[in-house]
Image (cartoon, rainbow, N blue to C red; front, side):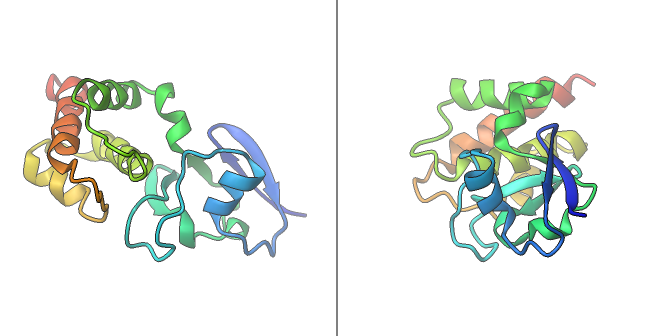
Length: 156
């Protein structure tokens, strides 16, 4: 019997001893190319996905350890109000440049919008601290997350 979990609401099954990393499974077995392989050492954040709602580095998560888990990738952002707000803010503020880092940043930002009662610039900086953007788009990224937080949480 294999390990069963879901990715963006779709059921998956892998062998219990499968030691492939989640990022490989997403990109190669499932064809979900949005999650990027960056450093492979949990240092850049390009591979971040949500596992049971919490950000996790897919480059160091073995699929054989995901029994019963629910995985969400950047491809699922449009399925939620917060995700749509993030996508709209990033587009409106032109928050990305090359885009390589954005999938991980967007996914972690989604978790931030869902869990943080503090949408201040300092809280956003702290939440995204583990992400590298070599293009220098940080000010626009932070502004986009703040805008999305205001749109989804600020009015509450």
